[in-house]
Image 1 (cartoon, one colour):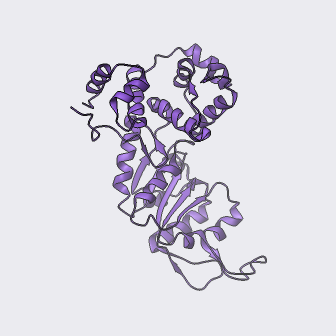
Image 2: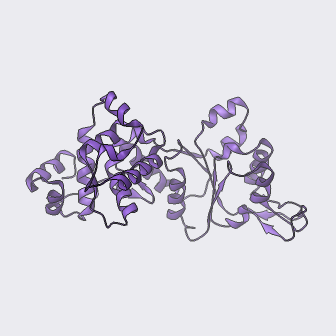
Amino acid sequence: MEWDQQKAPELALGGLIGVSAGLQRVFSLLRSVSSHSYPLLILGESGTGKEAAARVIHSLGQHKDKPFVTIDCGSLAPALIESVLFGYERSAFTEASQVKPGLLYAADHGTILLDEIDELPSYLQAKLLRVFQEEEFRPISSTHHKSLNARIIAATHRDLIAQVKAGSFREDLYFRLNVVQINMPPLRERKTDIPLLVDFFIGKHTEGESQIEFSEAALKHLFAYDWPGNVRELENAVRRGLALASGPKVEVADLGLDFCEDALNRNEPLPLNEFERSAILSALHETQGDKISAARVLGIGKSTLYRRLKYYGFW
């Protein structure tokens, strides 16, 4: 029998990488919603890949050749947000010497990602709600409306329900955006993805030219840590290890991370079965499904690999 490619989970979808059950559910949901155009709400801690998920939805949709526009609502000064979103006419204010289309217009027939949408002031939340309801907007100082022809995806790392209850986020806007909700799992809940992510980041930051790898002890530290900064923090840890490693392996001392002592003291058991499963999938991916080569990469016999494939349901 041959290894069943159909049973094997996807290793990556766009910029999202992992075989954990939580991420596989996200993959399935992203594929399902990509064929529609209704609003979406993506929730998750910082560094979990919310923007990457939005880009996957756009890239799989029927308007993938149209613009993907990201608006970081938390980084814009309140006085600028309205002009950035809606655009303005000439002489709308002192510095307005020419017509400036807003980002809502720039995303025509594409996708708009409103990142950290809870940072919008309440008056702009009300304006956006009307825009979404009427599917049109008016640039500052203009007498004409423009059609909104873009898919709206909103994202935040905060608890919007709590924000609604606190009165800082409009309940009607929340329900308008929350047609489908996608929750990005934090890295501490998908630690089985760590080996794949480490391999990916090594390739990314060495341009695939280095044979360096993480030692078993270093990987144990990565597994023991809870990663409050999620995948973004893990990538920084890999880059730091690559920069400090003096040999063919990144050792614990090369990590230079505050979590090292804490991780050792916690002495939490590792999910060895999931670690092995992830390693096997990574090896098969690297060898394009060649089981003999994968066994060689893993340092085990072919018959052992066949037994493990059967055990994990890939046989």
